[in-house]
Length: 188
Image 1: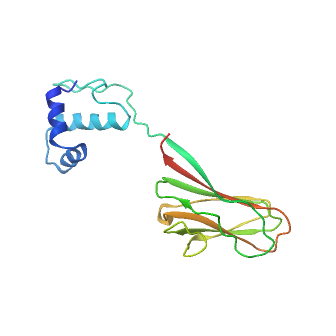
Image 2: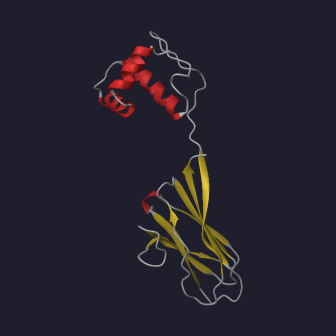
Image 3: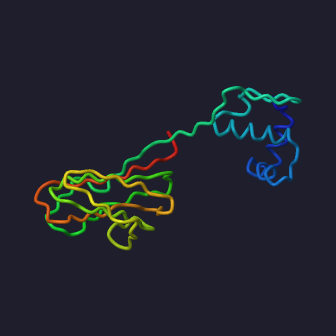
C-alpha cells in the first residue's frame, strides 16, 4: 500500500494530469513515484478507489494480477426518418440530425421500402438544421428497391450534426423509407 503521507502529499501538490505531464516530460525522474502514479491512474480508469484497492509496497512494487481497465460503451439509435412516404423524386430531408458531439463512432442505416431505387446522401451541419446549410459527406450511395444500406462515418467526415437525404430515382408508388443513426457512446 502506498504510505498515507506520500498519497496525501501527491494529492495536495499536483493534480493527476499535472503529475502525469511531469512524468512524460522527464521533470520527475523518480521511477517509484511514476509507477505508483500510473497504478493509481489505472485504478481510477477501472472505477476503483485507490484507497480501497490492493496496494503497492515500498520498496519493491507489486501489481495485482489480472487487472484490466474497462470502459463501458453503449449504442444509441436516433430516428432520422420514420415511415416517410413519397410520390415524387424530390429530395427527402431528415426530420432531425443526429448530435454526434459525444459519439465515438456512428453509422447510418437506411431501409428503402419504396418500389424504386433511391440515392442516399449523408449530410452534416454545424447545427441541428436538416434542410438548409448542410454539407455533403462522401458520395451518394444507391439503394435498390426493398433493400437496406449502411454508411459508417469516418473520422475525417465527422461533423457536429449528421443526417441523410434520400432521393428516389423514379416516382415511387408504394412503400416508405426509414433512416436511423446509431451512435456509439461511452457509458453504460
